[in-house]
Image (cartoon, rainbow, N blue to C red; front, side, top):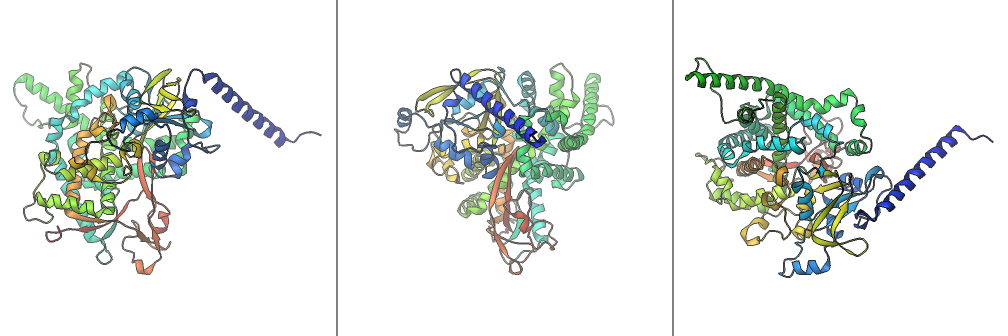
Length: 617
């Protein structure tokens, strides 16, 4: 009897699948003598299709699964662990390494938590050609940010880092403090006006989505210090367009297609070439919006530079020549480009500006938003911070408002503010994870030997060319093995002198945390980011009271609610519990589970906010 077409197709597919599985297993067996991946522990019960990736990156909030696995897998060898805890510092062992099963039958993924291993992968071999970002995702980075330092590898990165390093030197950031303070005050005024215009129930405060508000100030800051442009605290036409386009990308990140897209791209790199024009245009839209805005400013700056050079040659200022602002980043980059003898690459300049605007404003703002939400849930910490600010003369509604100086913020005058900012930067690292690919066979050293899956001790791990490595900064900053049992809790006191020393196994870089990476790949603008976080926290906690939101009204589908359930009386509708979840998609994005029922779909971080005056402070 002839087989049906469907039976033939099914048989062929089964045969191909069997061949694929058998061939893959045979390759793994051949490689076991040369490499050590199979010796590392792996989370149990991986999904047959999604491996462990869906559990870590979509099913559970970031970085919950990574922390659980870091605590259980790749344990330090007993003799080393005993030596390291001999002084009574418990739970401070940050060393380890494990593997997870990749989705769509991808080879196992290496996950290091050992600081020496991370430094070897992320920092020491930036320019040796041993490791790089996954080539599969480089075209996506180019579409989102252009060919800037975030895109660059190897010598391109070295050249760009050298040119950009001076943009955010300590002295230059000190000179930015006044602009940062002015933008923070404008945000406070805008927030006061918004609260005054919103109806709120009783004395609970106005229900607000704290995500989005700090970014108005950080966008203003980067506009002014970057290229003398005023985004009008998020109200200018260009600002609204940038915010809208960026929000669209963020909303996609918390959906299942957003989780699936990079996995498919990794499995089938040809997708990069086959993407519909509309998809590519949507990915490029935010970058092009910023480039269009910056193009005229670059042209004007180049003309000013030429006029200034002519004036210097002639020994006099030409009448009618506009005075240039030597302090903005655009002017600095043009001067730096001319000094290296290669002239100004306008396309590269525009891509740097796009990266400054898109990445620079959203990362700092995200830390501030999440920290304000944490302070809303930790009233004792919020009260302690406000008490310190009041004692230092920073009082809401004061007739003679005291403005914070650079020394106030970056010195020792406000230790609790410093602790809150560091804790926010530790817990709410915006780029919660990063990937690397081994470009050649390598031996990754371990600072602390670990116990492998077979019970034997490993002092290093041999990896093959093409090995994918995932570094979870969110887990490294919060896992219990490094930070103790309170590692995943918001507790600023850990940074005070009485709580020192800091964790035993640490990274390089800012405060030995992974937030800004380390080595040649460290975030060049980290000093400005810290200044922004402290200034915004000081200003907003001084002027407003933040309270947690445990329940929100379920909004009838017929209701006309523009931003969540603000203004809807809880007595009129059913109430639902607020259950927060955070997913990683380039940055960490929070949302309310079933938020659509409350008219709060997409990226949301709810708080209740009250304006403070002299008598409230």
